[in-house]
Length: 77
View 1 (spheres, one colour):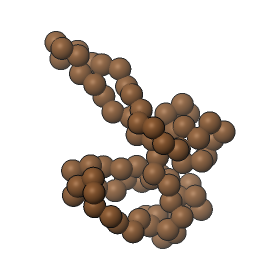
View 2: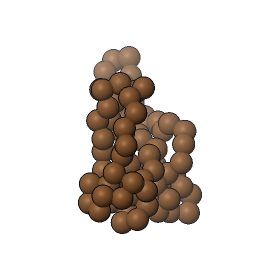
View 3: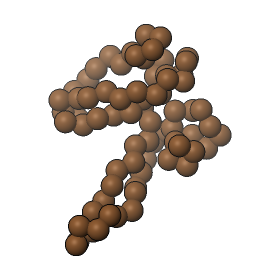
View 4: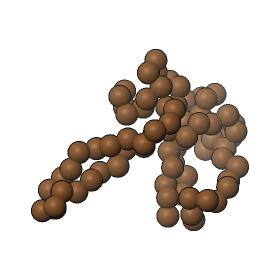
């Protein structure tokens, strides 16, 4: 099940939502204030090496939550 991270543009609350598939459509609302003014964050994921060693972190493309100048949450969180 995909887990997506979101950031509320009204109260800046960061939260996660679970989806049954990557094609599922949901009306996302902030868990703190109920606003629908939310943005999907850039998420990090781990990559394991051949011998099970920890890999580097990578980011997917897309916009950040808008709480910083770079709009890339991977660079400021």
